[in-house]
Length: 261
Image (cartoon, rainbow, N blue to C red; front, side):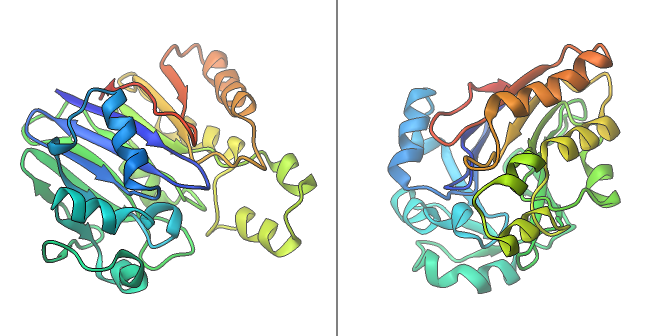
């Protein structure tokens, strides 16, 4: 078993479940613990399976519920030092010592091999991740959200994924014609901001291979995007190359199904 579900995803909070026979972990917890528990219950995943919470970067939509979740489940937090330094005040006291990882290295939690790598985002040592099961070279999960610009490093790390969770944050026209002030619009469009729908297509075009089976679009803006527009933009590309992989769009209020990586 090697499964994932995007429990919640968007500007108001994010959490991703990664699960194997031996362990389940959460990548980010940017919503209340009760919201995460509700999603787990709906997926019929026992909360006691969760053995760790990982943090990608310091922003509150990824860290808001981390402290409460760790305390309630009595599980460790995995995070890099710079990120922890920026959000320790929000996380509060923890039941176990913080377990620091090095961006660019790898570490294991039971049979889950986790590789954090740098992302181009306006946060301290912001990370994206790949996940594999120890001894299983055939399946690979990539999670790349809050990715202002798809660097060569990011593209290389996301190659050979069998399941990819990828940011598709905004439609460029909706962003520029929308209500945000100019400074925020420029921040979102910048290389340390967020990927647009078209930029997400560009990433997929570079990492596409015959083994990619599932693509989940994530971190959609409720103001500057529309789920159907994001899906149609990506589906038009997939149809043009005659690719029939499973395409899903994660959202802020409902989990995706459990997907076999």
